[in-house]
Image 1: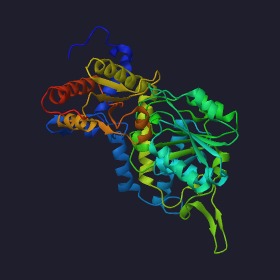
Image 2 (image 1 turned 60 degrees about the horizontal axis):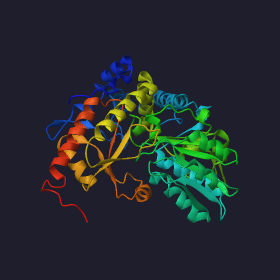
Image 3 (image 1 turned 180 degrees about the vertical axis):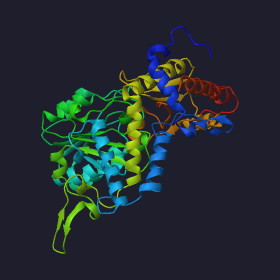
Image 4 (image 1 turned 135 degrees about the vertical axis):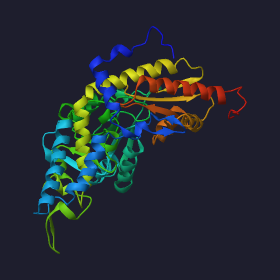
Length: 431
């Protein structure tokens, strides 16, 4: 494809491009062929692919170090414990938490938010109290709070977003009041790519003594995250969106909040002593980590952080921004295509609709060419309702994506238009 004179591909420093070009070869799945075409993977907001270093770390644990942690005096258990706790320290460093004890390992973002809703918020909620979320939240940052409201009589309050997908800070400030008990908002919208003004959100809440949880499931792989600079009270993310394995995630919390939380699960390493009369809970972080952890997953998460650090999250962010700019510019030239989510501050998520063509049809036809995108409501049904949509097609970028991937996406969408567009003879527009 011939590039126009306004191409901004040179906005990414050459050294970063070279590093990222070399990194692509580290992801074995990107050598896969789908329907005879080399895989173009653009579904990174759902899950990222894994480099050899992460795959090898998990396999190596099972081959050479497999044992339970914290409970054994034998060599394997000690090695497993050391690897597990070393990964905790890597997470602490990656998000600049104050202490390792502020890092709680969970199954993922969803479990982390549920843990805060049940163990921190619910014991403090009374009928008429309020929980604030935004209209662009993932279901995982809506449903746990609805459940807490049903059990306590609290009320869910929703911050609106405008047509561009911008968080309405003025409306948010007006929602905060003496009944507000916690604010829970996304750091980066999985459906729109909007980066919310989290520091302003936190400052306004803290001015009223209200704690803030940030859903960092999307942001953690796109943006530098410094929980102390943000001053958030809780931060939740999943490893599988950060080039790590599924089934493992992190809840960061300020020490005073974690110590005040009621454990939601009992048994295993979360206890110090047990009798039939009473149980004494363990110290942090273990008091909130019941049962045998996903040890291999924790170790592999540590390897994923090493991998990202070796490239640099700022370099990754700049690369993804260049891809987003390139894709936005090219897609805006396609008649009938509408980009959903045009906030000023965006990361590498690009949602769109195409005239009367259903997003699932777009996704299916792109898959015929080996191009993997997401189609649907993206677990953000209230947002879709706000925007008057049933769903969108969504391409999302990662460190291993290239401008050639963008070109393939654009060519694939043009083929969809030619095949299914009005007048092509293959598609009957809905009423």
